[in-house]
Image 1 (cartoon, rainbow, N blue to C red):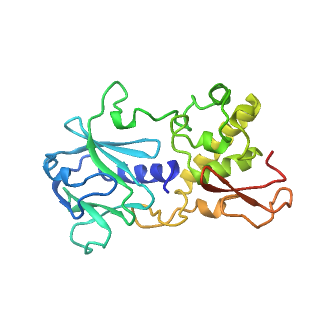
Image 2 (image 1 turned 90 degrees about the vertical axis):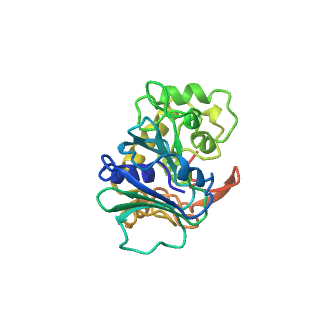
Length: 275
């Protein structure tokens, strides 16, 4: 599933394309992905112009000149392309086309149909729609720090991996980057969040920032479905230290990486290094 680095990679690409482009026509080829798509046909989009592109957690907001925004989430297999209009035939799982000024077409593909594309109305000083009001702290912000994580973890019995993947606590860290963060911080994913010390919380937040930033610089991780807007793959998968390494030796201590089910997900960790 695309996580924060993948969403940020898409945002950076769309930022170079969408602002200033006018929507000329909308085509919907499927009634719904995770949410209905047919309302887009009556949303008054033709004639509207994109003014900017923002990210909140794993979501993107493409602002429109009438104060609304297109809300995007890429689910398990969402892929966005912006291509020359008419150059390529529609692919089997492309569900939405926005024909833009300048001879370009925005295309949204999603094999599993868990993605979202809808029109919303941002509100407040930060112009965040109600759909995203539940999201917690951005992990690359100054607010995400050891003191913050320590304070929120008190009396929490949930495993620390689930804790840092909880979008109400910190938004955008999924399975890949939680696995990498806890390995780098030398903390077991099974640890009860309430047992973390403030020093350990500072290690977690520091390592998370470093890993997420490195992943953004590498264009994200292409593990299965993720592709850039230009169709290329993210390179951070080549730098992963723990995710997907079960059964191989830990490069730090030589112990064999193990896997454990936490909250229904398999989690890879080193039983020698991660306490």
